[in-house]
Length: 77
Image (tube, rainbow, N blue to C red):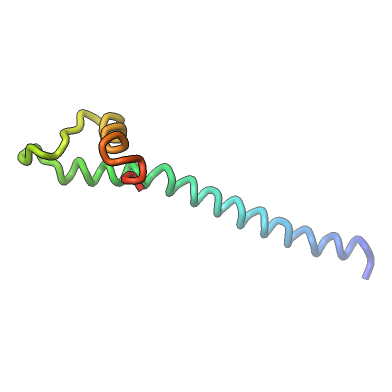
């Protein structure tokens, strides 16, 4: 087998690893960003204002900071 043939076989393997790594990083980033927003969305849906012992949130940023401050940052995961 010539050297040019061995190089052409290793190149697709390299692209497969690069694509797999890029997909894994993109998936992790999506989950890391979207999951806290899902938690906040659920809190907005559950909190209808009738129960006074639950904190009320003004907006999304206020909800994220309030949850992180009162319940610790890990409660957003």
